[in-house]
Each structure stands twice: as structure tokens, then as C-alpha cells.
Length: 115
Length: 223
Image (cartoon, rainbow over all chains, first blue to last red; front, side, top):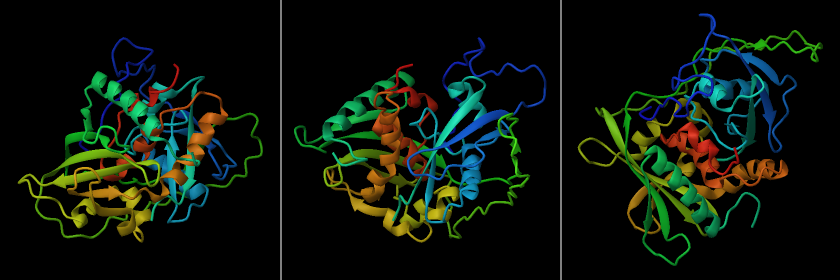
């Protein structure tokens, strides 16, 4: 997309904007906690370790399959409980901006939003 | 106000917050006042957003997630979630030879539904307007699969309520339903109200190529 962007927030743990301090070459998975909002079904398994290069769209599809979303239902994913990141945003960026205590909390809402 | 809706006053206040942030990060949003004292008579505009053709968000091959180590969760069922390759569900369509589209987005307030509404136009490099088929073909695959049956009711051609020119519109009839759980969640947690406009725009914008930078997430929150 033309507006695919790197996060424009300075990384809190490094002087270089956008750089990621890494101790090894291996990508460390990110602990993600998935929480249902409103009347969205609650996932039996909420905590997942996810590849940091995965995108928001991938996580949405995963949740959709897990909670058996119908094709006509929409699923939205939120950080900070209120902001839907772009589908092509990488988990790494979300974690840098909104992660705390070693994990990233994501809320999801299910709705028959369209049509 | 009914659940999931917002007042004209709140729309204006939150638009101000959005505009302040947009100015700070040079994101290009502007406020247009046409009918000054009329509810819904002023609106947000973002121009000259270029979207190259051929870029589309698709879900790549999925592989099972590992389960995080969680000492409290010892009752692992041992079920593997078989993430077969997701359908990309692209719409077969004859696209004209176009390198990019130039988008213009308008965010208005609907006095009928008491929610914001997103209008937009897309034009080709030669200035001619894109058709509804073309616009639809650029909707990300992850949304197309869900909207296949209802796409014409959800994305329609409508006259701009203030300017009177034809534009595409994301129909607002289900916006309140969509926003209600989110608004409830933020209120219940006693975090103060978040910015409805930013929450809504971040949710629906990507369907039509409008992606808000992550920093907008901080608007309205005490950090």
C-alpha cells in the first residue's frame, strides 16, 4: 500500500529511531494476549508466541478461524483497546509501541458490520 | 445518545484532536467548513493519497502458532490448529492499465445515523474517475472475502451531502453496531473516553486504502 509506514514513534529502548535491540540474529517470538471485547467469543487459549514479522492481517485470520467467524462477519483487532492498526502492520512494530511487561495485548471485536 | 453513536459536538472536538496530531506528523488532514453553523456542515479532508495498483494485503501461508509457555495453562489439549493457506479471494476483474490511483478522503458527520461517514473518490493518472469495479478491485483481499455478497450495499456511490458531487461512500448503517463494544470497553475500564473518530477511522479506513499511522493511537489517551 502506498501508505505502508514504519512506526513514527521513537523506539523507547534505543537511541536510533526504529532500530530494534537484538541480542542474537534469531527473531524472538512475541508473547501476544488475545482478549475478546463486547460479545466476541472468548478464546480458550489466549496467550500465543508469534513471529514478530507476522502482520495484523495474519493475526486477524487466525482469530477468525479459531472462533469460527462466519464469512459475513467482520473481525477487528485493536491495540491500546481502541486503535485498529493497518492490516499490513508488523507485530514487531505493535510490540515496540504498545507492548508492556514482555507482552502485547490485543483486543478483538466481532460484528456483522457491513451490508 | 444511542450506544455506539456520537454527537456533532464530540465529532468536532475529536476532529480537532485528529487535526492537531495530523499537523504534528504532517499527515495532511484538513478541516473544511462549508455550512458553518450546521451540524454535519463541516468535515475532514485528506487529498492526494497515491495508491499504486498491484499492492494488496493478502494473508500469506499460515503456519500453526506455537503456544506460549504458560505455567498456569497445563491443560493443553494438544490440538493443532491446522492453518491451511487462506484464500486470497481476489475478485477476478478486468483492470484497466493503470499504475496508480489518486485518492481523496472526506470524513463527514451523518445527522441521520449520528456517526461519522467516510466518503472518497479515486482518480486515475489522467484525472478520470475510477469506476466502482476498479475501486472494489483494490479493496484488500482479507476484506473482500467477507464483503463479496454485500459489497454493493456496503460500498456505494453517493452524492456528497455538502458538496453535492458524486463520491463513493462506506455505508454508515452498521457503524454504531460496530463501535458499540469498543466504546463500552473503554468506558468500562474507566480509562476515560478514547477518540471515537480515530477508533472508527482506523477500523474502516484500511478497506479503502486509508491507513492511519500508529501514533494516532495515542490521541485521547493519557500516557
